Length: 132
Image (cartoon, rainbow, N blue to C red; front, side):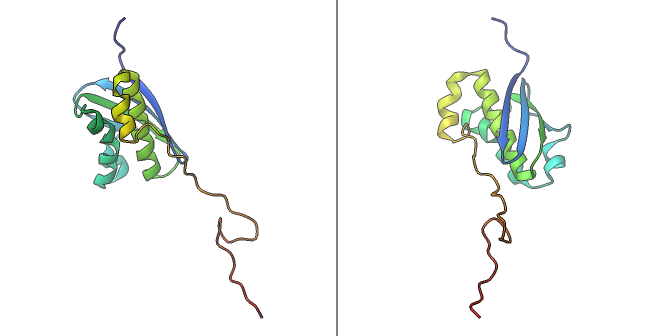
């Protein structure tokens, strides 16, 4: 069977959705046409968050990442890209599953923003109770 040109995965977190493609290369990461430092700002946290699947599997610097992400904020988008990279690595080689699973990178984080309820100020915050 011929080798694919790229490996893909879809990652989600909160309301962010990322479509990720991995190409054989030198470790260059592109998010929506920009470098991660330009897209996420100069917080190193997001760049390390995105690279976690490569560190867990020992593939640092072996793949170029092309990610298109929309929805949510910067933190949710970074986590969605991380999830997509983990799924794309699984598309590459199923033998990487135990390492990704042990690092907790394959599980989609189910936490979402809770809806505001009527009569409350936010999802759970109530107006102050006055006895008299």
